[in-house]
Image 1 (cartoon, one colour):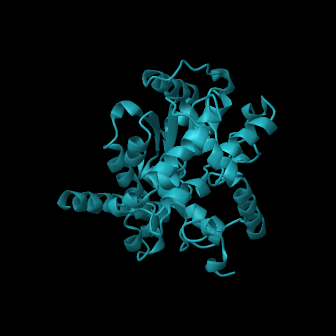
Image 2: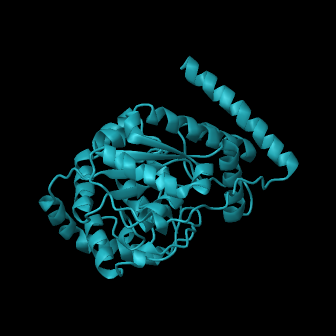
Length: 343
């Protein structure tokens, strides 16, 4: 099937891996039918001071797990797998999800995911179609330069998010590695009451995961998977091992640059190992940050969170490949750092 025959949200930057195209077409038609209701909800949604939580970070850095932990406490709303099916009518999707899912159903979790995808209608979804609708304007990467940013329908995006806030009485959590990590400063400007949970992980383990996901998805390491940094056009010309090394380093550096432009008082940094070691403390810290930013005191059922997780920071490559990857990461850190200094 040619890409021009596909709905826009399935073309370009969106992976077709695991998609049932006929079902996606049907869902697009359903979304079109309920879009008038979404417009009505946006027109009647009042501006709110309710905080928004944006979770960002490189792939495989526990961003999905953090969203699951926040949801299970009962103090936060997330975009569930059911709600995400209505990316063109997100407020309607949240209302439908709230009405159909039993009250305590969304507080039971496996705390598992596959490449960021969770199981069950009630678990968190990254809402990729929704965010691509606003940020995918035909550029080659997931980095929005100043020209692309000027073309974003900021008013439309703000109205859609406001309608979602009105559909829930709890702080709403958005998790999306693809679009948030490089645009934290833009999101901070568009949503003044937002806070940012920045997940991080050692670049070696990020790159190793990228390599292993390529093997799992494509059977060999040359196929691209996940976030496209601003230097994507240069990265794809490299051998596969160099690609994942530079991809991991570039994601790390570009995310750091975006966060430097955000008030540190609005950001909480979370290292991967901390998520394994003290998940309850992390969730308490996020709730405290929201309180400091003017949100109401949250009733966080911290006992719903496991006390710890087993770390998966293990070397899974053979010694030769692992050594080559470490060397490549160090080299790209040096080269990209020098390039940034010169630039």
